[in-house]
Image (tube, rainbow, N blue to C red):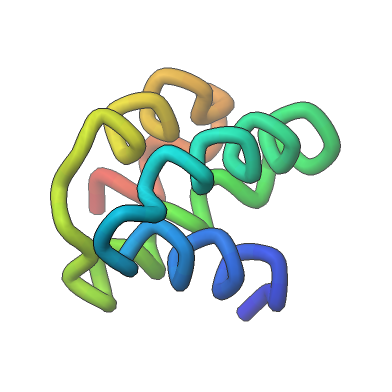
Length: 71
């Protein structure tokens, strides 16, 4: 697992810091869009709280990463 993904989800999963994670998510989407699939899978495994953050990650997910996340 990527340290960047773990850091983003740690911020997201901590109450009152979820807004901070959005900037981190956008940076990941810009610099390493293929990592968004791994982020979603890790968020599901961790049972991260649902939020607009995860909806945004799904919206930014590259098309070729969708099948792995859906499975």
